[in-house]
Amino acid sequence: MWFAGAATAYLVGDAILNFGGADAWRYTLASTAVIGALLFLVRLGTPESPRWLISKGRHKEAEAIIRRVFGSGFSLKNLPEQAESKNLSFASLLHSGYGKRMAFVTIFWMCSVTPVFAVYAFAPKVLEALHLSGDWASYGSIAITLLFVVGCIIATRLVNTLGRRKLLLHSFLWSGLALLLLGALRDGPSMIILLMFGAYALFIGGAQVLQLVYPNEIFPTEIRAGAVGVGTSMSRIGAAVGTYLVPISLQSIGIGSTMYIAAGITFIGLIVSWFLAPETAARDLNDAASLDSDVSQQAISGTFSKHSR
Image (cartoon, rainbow, N blue to C red; front, side, top):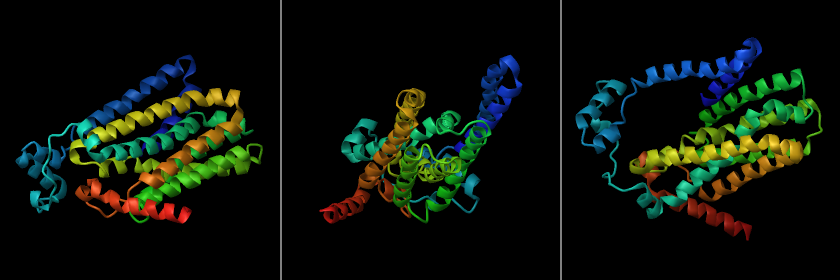
């Protein structure tokens, strides 16, 4: 839905700029207030987390929300048991062993969004640098935007069947190869360029979807919100840097090197995910958030190292 909104914003913004006259940029900025107002109204009815209410001793409110959301046949008895909530600080939990997971979330999130924001924000300029101009650049930008949506839909369908870890590794691998080929084939036919861009948009969907899955599954309740917040904040730093540097990179080192750098960032995400990404599919929240679940991943990494030797 994030990319669906981004695609809609791309099309609506382009229309406003084309027909809004001299004050079009003002209308474009002001139009976002409509979305903000609608979102505010929707969130007024958002129920509180029953787990959080229980941690605060507000059991009756938690019970009421469960019945309202799931039906009168459900109650607190249907909520899976969780470990006793501990009053630990964010720093304490990181020190107790969750630092590695925080590093994984931060790095894979940054590596997945940095090229996406850069490519997405400057799609027409990037396509123009790849010798696609006029209608090709315009329609190509719209097509790539919509393919980001399709890629996320496909990833959402695969996340429980393929598994989190495998989906993330495949997402980084194939999207990185698409960027690598874009750098190598920068002077190739227009259709090949669009095909590679489309492949990147489709395959990066796995990493995009998992940005909101992994942080919510691999941290306990006490640190979950902080972990999501830190991961989001750090990823936006990468997004801002990528967006800022793309036009400079296109002008100074050219489109080929720019695509190689984007591919390199994506492959860094692949390497980090290979060694640190846990598999949380089919686990309940308590099990997935437990550090004991890292043991199986260490065995996988050990097997990989053994075969490498």
